[in-house]
Image (cartoon, rainbow, N blue to C red; front, side, top):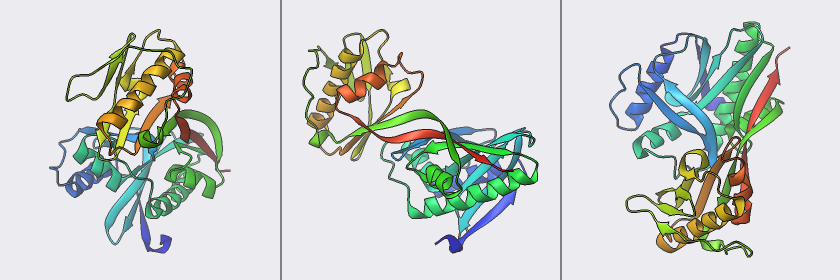
Length: 288
């Protein structure tokens, strides 16, 4: 499969605008008007990838971009930024996944990375390392999930893990049973069309699409000063509410990251019966 993937290197900052136009067109959307910026998030595969952006305006620190195609179809790209002297940073994006997110307007429903995406990312990060080395960089940095294509590229290139940014916790509401020992809490559901709960000084909202529900803890959990056990009970109530009101949902994925509600979310999630399925990591590849 890798032999069918072609790579292009381009140092023109306008490459971001051309990629954005292709992605929008593939989703049946009108081309963005520069300098439009469209966010896309870390898979969480749930590759809940760390935030990446289609930047139609380019970057003043952009060294260049590696683009992967198969039979002319845009698969993705990896952009390199920095001064080219010490460490430079790379960030990849998957075109089909970004197009689906633009159409849906949410991150719920992302499927695991495909073999094609993994192959493309290995090739793109290898070329990115070569280009970074050519401009004098000694280290290439990037981030992504251990289970996603960024992690696949890191293992293939023997990059080392330098830190953990976030975790993706998951649970199947239909195969879940409320853990014992949680305190009783009083909650009420949020008014439609919002999905979630409010109570005990906290509010939890979740995006539901098809058979998947997604919650970004930093954006969708508001619980200032709420103790971890109370928050755990609230999350358990949320899982129960999803099971009762959205029986087709087969996975609730929670993106939880460093710097959340004083660590309470990280403590609360296992109390509610969720488990870590993916970790968002920083990778570093020595180039000398």
